[in-house]
Length: 128
Image (cartoon, rainbow, N blue to C red; front, side, top):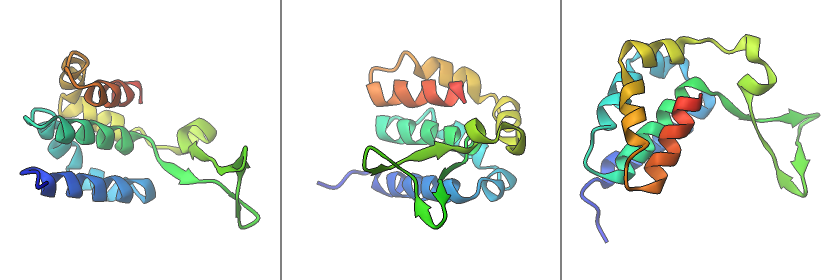
């Protein structure tokens, strides 16, 4: 079934995976403003993914490798949040930009959204 917001959906997913590797280019190219604008979108999928990507602009995720191997927890690869491991090495540019474009109030409003994925991602973005 074709969703009329499918292209935005795919673009937000692609950007999410890019943010896993590097957030600096996204911040330099005003991605936070674009994501903040998408928080007002009519599609819950677009709002949820935009708030997820706002969270991604603050938190750099990576696969922790030790001696060329992914660390495993109970037989599964474990994903670590870089700010949790190295809090002094992560810039605050994402937080500063979120405040600058006033997306925090929009995220707080999304905590009342009827879609649970929108609420969860908004809460995660606020937390970060």
